[in-house]
Image (tube, rainbow, N blue to C red; front, side, top):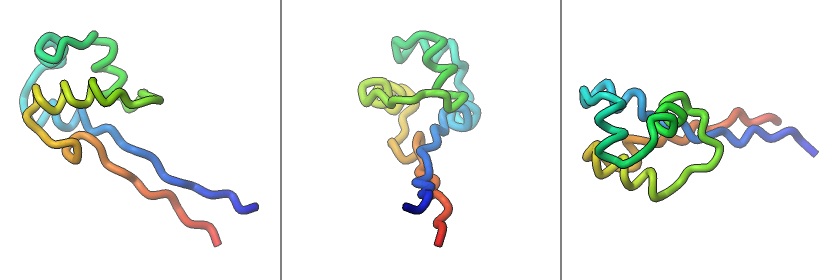
Length: 78
């Protein structure tokens, strides 16, 4: 069996925060999320994405899911 690199989903919240000019504290307050949750999403340390959290972030940041998440394909081994 070959070793398969399936890639990963990159969370681009940190980039989005910088681009929109909003503080993590304001995002945390407006989206009703813990600051620690925001930090985990910003550092790409979330192991299971919560669709309700993603919806809150997209609503508050006035963005689409593709602004927040990006699929990074893995390397194909032959």
